Figure (cartoon, helix red, strand yellow):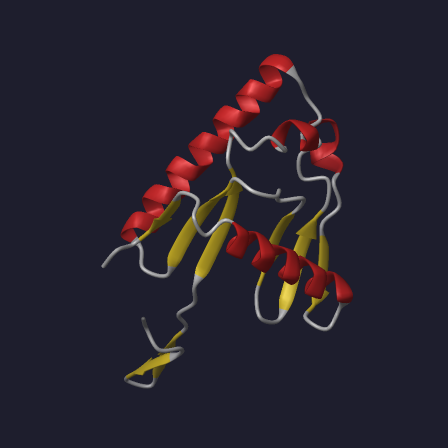
Length: 137
């Protein structure tokens, strides 16, 4: 594991870990969270599979990136979370309003930040035994 941050010749390089949760296409909750049915639902499930394959390939060759399938529980929102702030998108799976979905930004002191962090960590631990992609070197 790389120390954070590193310093070389008075230049600082920030190194950070990236963890991604992607719903498994066979997760029974997927149909309940997506606002489509039939062929659209099957296309969405195929997209989830492609997302895991795409980001999994990156993770398998890049240290500090891990992608995990969510087979238990469900990712209920889109977010990017750092130590200092959160970008949060509710209604992650509502295709009819995807272009109109608001994006919230908040700092680490907010209850929304804490709730999103806690939900992510719970899903991360709950799905430890799920398929994961990570660099082995």
